[in-house]
Image (cartoon, rainbow, N blue to C red):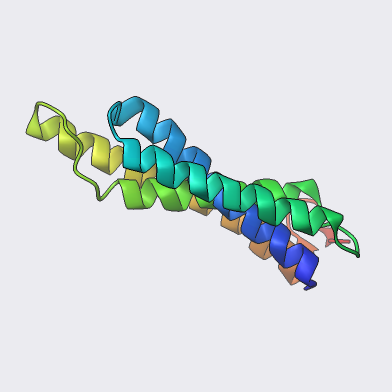
Length: 132
């Protein structure tokens, strides 16, 4: 794996983490300035990393791989956010939203890791042919 491919993967994870945080912050933390700042910093880091990867030498990984790492970043954020306690009025709602975000994170990670692992193995079981 080239340094350029590694940077694109890391950029995808950072952008997924940051944009997942923005999405959750808008829904659950209207006054959470620190969360917005942290999300902004993460997205900026992802954009800068992606910028350096695109400008560097060598081939870029497929857009599908970048999209997969983006969703992995969003899934990691949702799993971590599932542990957070939100300012909701009813205890059952706190539990339900936390569980919902955690399950969404697990689902996002599961749906994206399976194709990545398949492609690394060199065989795509859906088409029955080697992956190029």
